[in-house]
Amino acid sequence: MSHVFYRKYRPKTFREVSGQEFIVKVLQEAVHREMISHAYLLAGPRGTGKTTLARILAKALNCLKPKQGNPCGLCENCTSIEKGFFVDVVEMDAASHRGIDEIRQIKEAVEFQPMHSQYKIYIIDEAHMLTKEACNALLKILEEPPRYVVFILATTEPEKMIPTVLSRVQRFDFKKLTFKEVRQKLTRIIKEESLTIPDDALTHICYLAEGCLRDAEMMLDQVAHIDLTEHNIQTIFNRPSTVKMMQLLHAIATRNPSTSLAELTEFEVSSIPPVHFLRDLLSLARKVTLLKLHKDAPAILSKEMSKEDIATLTLLAEQFELNHLTTLIQNLIESRKNIYYSPIPFLPIELAIIQSLS
Ligand SMILES: [Zn+2]
Image 1 (cartoon, rainbow, N blue to C red):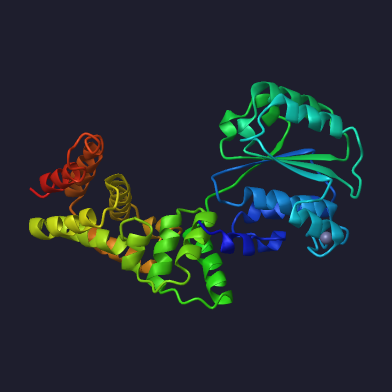
Image 2 (cartoon, helix red, strand yellow):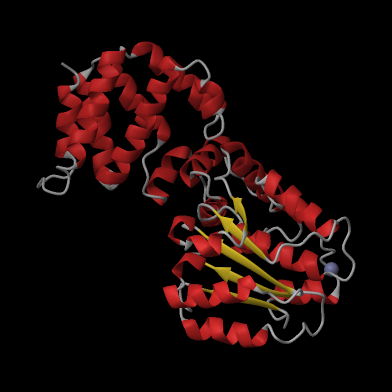
């Protein structure tokens, strides 16, 4: 899979980062005021900018001409860190280098002052993958770090890290990006690349990305030069089209068996994995419930959906009786466990829908 846009548009300074405003502000301010912690933990879902921000922080700390805590991006140090061959910034992937030996090497190396900059920085990605011994060795360094050493640990699973390490780090929890933030970033790329992407297709990509900017950029990459509609996105990413699923929900809400089955068959013949289909349908049905019961639902959903989709779902919320909706959701959840045993994988879903039409 191509990574062109993800690499090309990867933020190089604090102000280019999408979302995570609070974290960006605190880190930039800390650099500006030279109130540096010896260890940071960047925790949160994949594709939300942890490693990107770790690199920006490394640049900001070692930049020769920082502006208000922001790296200049142009000096010798910034450009070498960007290219990944700056001797005082070491990146390590704990998923493939998990052991005590790697941490021992770091322990020996931190005894020596940085060669070209103020700080010697260790970025450890997937830090929860370190073995217990490696963690204990790391803890030893964190207990008495030389003043010029900074550790930046990134992890998707902070709960797997040992409490003694957690107690030594300044922790930042990254959020999934909102629908709007993902859309803004993709819109910028589309503009700069002069791409033609229909609005509904863009909306659908942002929806599928589920707050993971990296996924969104990779999807955009994949479809950048294809004649695109919301409908063929379904085929390209092997995911059900939101518009088609809303049509199915409308047929169920109005208790129309023939249209319901016809709509469902379309998903089946397009060879979308039934588990993906079920998850997306349940997620939509849940949103309809939310719109039916919660007055702030449109505002909550606007973080991940377009206004047009929310308007259609609101209409569905009016069409559905609450009991009908909860029965449908229950039946669909129930069908999940039968998918793998059924000789026809879509059949349990079909039955769940038929049962909720009566
Ligand atoms: Zn610089």
